[in-house]
Length: 119
Image 1 (cartoon, rainbow, N blue to C red):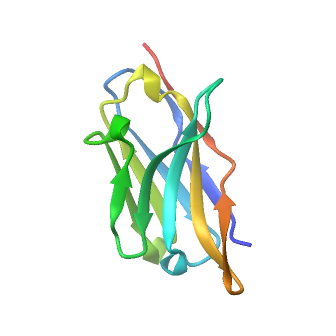
Image 2 (spheres, rainbow, N blue to C red):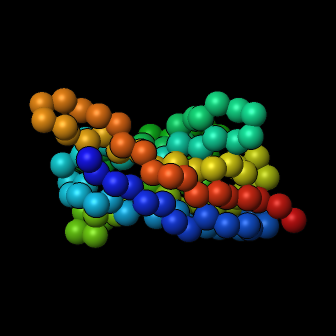
């Protein structure tokens, strides 16, 4: 099973930026999708952004124009660049990838990284 390890979270002031990284133990070029989800206290986990193997992206309306998802196949790493951060972006951010397990696709999740936006 592919392991995903997130990093880059922390405390930032409103309007600031952070870049999250998701390092995979296997080749991400074979993964149909990589995504970032987040879960705030008392709320359900929600999709933030997704990128396909071909590079197509989609974003939650709440982060469009502020967040950018990308990946580097050579480094087997995905990224989430977060700009103009708001207090409501505070959450644990999880990396997700669709991975092939034999003939089937399965979800792989990282352990999460905390992002806190506060003055």
